[in-house]
Image (cartoon, rainbow, N blue to C red; front, side, top):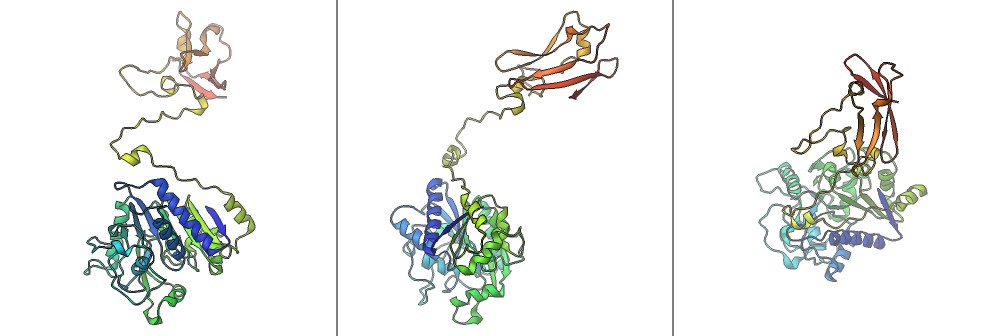
Length: 417
């Protein structure tokens, strides 16, 4: 988990926009390899969308090969409703100039003209309409149920190969998406009843309180946690306690955002007000962490699975030295081949019965042999204490093994001293 705090909401939002642009540009999406970006709605991401649109117009980033997936939607609000999240995205992020009549499920439809605007004016972005997917407030097709829409949405995410970057906010009660307190950490996209506190916060967008939806469709916490990377934006003092519970308290289903502690790559971005309840030691530690920057796509990712790549050599065994060729060592099994065969080395007792002295050795990759046991030093008629076998690796690590004779057949038991 990482933390980035900023003096103002504008600076925090600009930082998030910069992170999104950096991820897209580093990924270098193409027509055959698109970047999957998950987006939120509401008041929190508005400044981020405005900054992304501005920098897209300036040519700093292109969304031509980006696929967007939205987190949630109200049940019962069609795409033409001024307070639907489909309408919000159209007004505040998607480009109206490039819209076409869609024929693909979950593709954003062309909204009918409305005298109502949730926030200011539309922002043109060069994302094709068939590459932005939203949950439908009304089931698609009409004769199905919202549950069918949720199942299809999960299948869509799976077919796209998962989400590369998930951007979202956090609710005052700690909800993420519309996963209210008590939601399962393994939940998938589903219909959920909205908390009364959440409905109260969203009441400012509706003229009539009776129009506030009671249910919503939301991506589940289990689906959210499968994203490769997450950015959580929190703005204002009303989010301060939710941020503290999500970051400092233990993982608890009563604070859904606390599930993000279990994710290996999540970044909280806040203004000073939203981080004011965090302890200074917490902020100092999390801000000092340096998240791993995304690496450019590999050769097989850029050009597809047909490209033949050179495989990495197997990782050497640290206990035996990096220069040892383990495939030649009698201490580890060797793959069968027509050139090499391996059999169990003779026991020291049977070796002593031979006319010529034998040396059992471990051979290194440079062809040298390091003596492990010289059986000629022991007289069979006057048997001393059981001999000690010393294996010398190139790291000069001595491993003493005591050989105890168990029976007349020469069986032995090796015990590491």
